[in-house]
Length: 544
Image 1 (cartoon, rainbow, N blue to C red):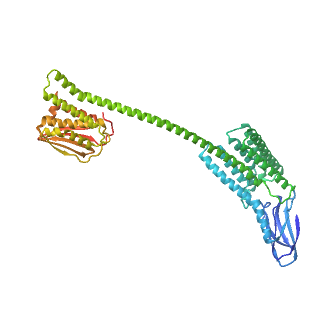
Image 2: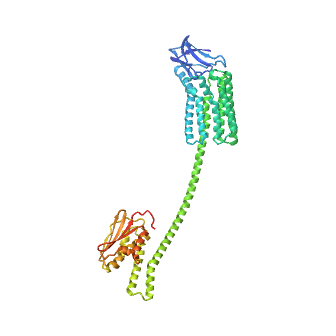
Image 3: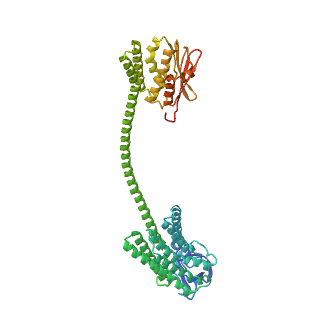
């Protein structure tokens, strides 16, 4: 096919000729100017039938002059023949703008669209790897990969060899894309229709197999059957999605059905373009079908994502409300538990005081009263009993003082209580009490036991030792506080006293020490006796 143009240039400058595209039955284009061959396109490029061409003419006009331009189009005479495009001849700048705009629309836009869709599909694949049960994301990636195969020829400068295999992969990605669209639309809501799915997979398989003869040779009959099968699959999927979306009133399925109807309309347009029913300068629209189709995909995923976020927000609000309610319940339970603990502590302390008063002061007073009633108690005995009762009462009161676990303050109160009695006994007291660490475990009961041990040790010195000096000292040794009570008296046999049937005093001291997890040691000195009370600073276990 030849096209003759007379270029009448009315302005100076370089000239050019360009066209948008011509039919796929055309192969090579050659340009002649004034009978001389000046340019030829590269027919081996991919999409050579669809690529715009620009030829700069080998002359620069300097005034009115005519040039004859002949353009030959080599065509395949069979099939639909050759439909040549309109030529654009003129100054270089506007013709170049026309060429670049056509290149962008016919080649650039499909490239940008397929790359963008593949990037979004890769993101969906990454999301699916983290959440394998979300099959919709995997199907989204498969759809983007199939579309990339379908538009792969837009990204290549030349077709890979063997070219028949390349086109077999490229063309047959379209029916499988329809199958994936169907699966995506229904798997998005966890629905399955096994019969329909088998039918679609079977039809796509038949379409793929029908294209096998075209790998080795061009067969027009099988090619038309293949395209017919692809159209049938697309129409079937579109109708099914439309019916399902309309029945369920699901906007995602309706959006995908609408996108598929747009794709079918684009396909009809491209068919009319191939048959020459519309102007050759029209664009192929199927490469643009990815915009509505994957727009519907993204809309469906966005709706699903938004629904998941809304569900999570509702769940968080519900959990927060339940947490606030449970916190109130826990606060009420904690307050009630605290009240119970306080009442229990009061009862325990009350019972302890009653037991101490009964076993200590009460027992002494009752024994003295019984002896006095029988006339067996003299004046000195009664006075001694009353003094012991008063000392026991003072010890109980001192144990209840808020001393904040300070042993030095506890023993200082004892010294103050026993000062007059020591003075009457003629004892000189040496008090060596440095700063000591606080005993966190020393509660009122433990403080009373310590006071009783120290008070009873001092009382033994007053009653039996006939001593003149008494030394009370404390020190921190090997993680323990050691309280020492030593005198310069006559001393006694500690072991013999402990084995004696009436030797309850030493056994009582050991028993009291065991009650608070402490150790007491008694040794004879020359002269005197030394009692050492070892108190742990950090007591991990409760006392027996």
